[in-house]
Length: 96
Image 1 (cartoon, rainbow, N blue to C red):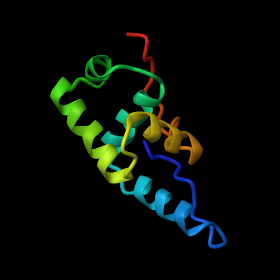
Image 2: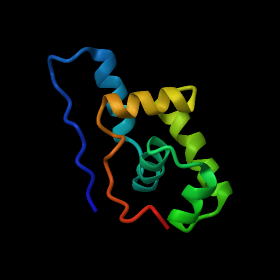
Image 3: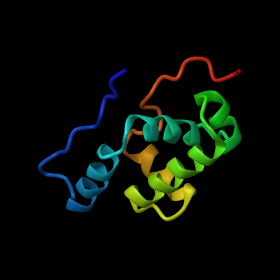
Image 4: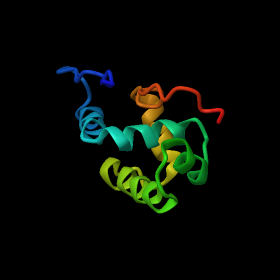
């Protein structure tokens, strides 16, 4: 499934463009994990939903923080929401 990525605007603030570029560098799996983080799911539930280990979720979470330069999960969610990456992937029924 292709993710609709927000486009870069030439007249946009350079800092915002840099942040969007960071989010566009994320892998499909990182975007799936990000989407679930934004929904408020804990790591254990993310692991179960995606069929991966808890350690792998924590690895993706660390990569998300590093790649986006967010620093904290709260800031990561704030940036993802601000730039439209919070609901970027349909994961089907999350109520398993």
